[in-house]
Length: 71
Picture 1 (cartoon, helix red, strand yellow):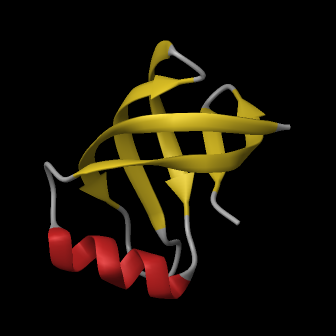
Picture 2 (cartoon, helix red, strand yellow; picture 1 turned 120 degrees about the horizontal axis):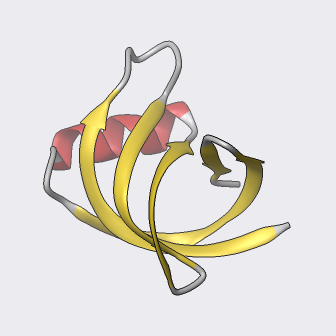
């Protein structure tokens, strides 16, 4: 199921997992969530750093914990 998200990057996991922790909203509801991204996107976001605002559309992988995967 596709979900619209926006938020601020609060932390990065190890590069091999490419997980980004975000605080913001998913489909208009406040949420803390994990965003799974490609290696290219992970490197791009790492350069921008913690505190960067991001938004987009992703597939919901899990509800508890809330995990989204960018295509």
